[in-house]
Amino acid sequence: MGRPAAGLSPTINQLKNHHKCMARDIIANGHLKNVDLARIYGMTESQISIIVNSPCFVAYMAELEDKVEENICEVREDIRLMVPRAAHIIRQELFHEPAENQPLSFQERKLRLTTAFDVIDRDSGKKKHGESASKHLHFHNHNELHMTKNMSTQDLQKDIFDLLEEDD
Image (cartoon, rainbow, N blue to C red; front, top):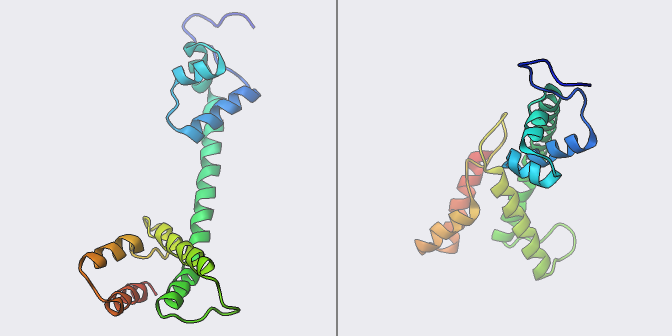
C-alpha cells in the first residue's frame, strides 16, 4: 500500500470487524473518546483517529444511529399503545373494580398497578409525532404532591381522573 502522498492523511477503505465493534461501542456508550478506544483495542490514538474519521466509518456510524432511532420510535409507539390499558388498570384499582377474569392476588395486583404506572410515566416524556403523552403527568410525583396536601382518597381519585380525561 505504501505511504500516503505528502500532505494527505491515510484513510481506510473498508471496515473490518473490529472497526464495526468500535462503532457499536461508541453508539452504546456515547462518551468514548479516542484515548478510550485506543486503550480498549490496543491501538494508538492516531490509528483510532484515522479509523473514526474515515468516510466509511462515519457512514457506518450514521447507519447505526438511524437504526437506534428507529428502535426508539418503535418502543415509544408500543408504549403509547399501552397507555389506554394502563389507565383502565389504574381506574380498576382506584375504584376497586374486579378484574375481568379471575380474582388476582395482592402481589399480582401490585405488579399490575406498578406496571401501569410505569407505562404512564414513560409515556409522559416529550411529545413527538402526535404521541398521546399524558400531558407530562407523572403519577408518582402527582401522588406525592397530593399526599403532602392531605387530600382525601376521593379527592385524589377525582383529580387523577380529571387529568386522565384531559388526555382522551
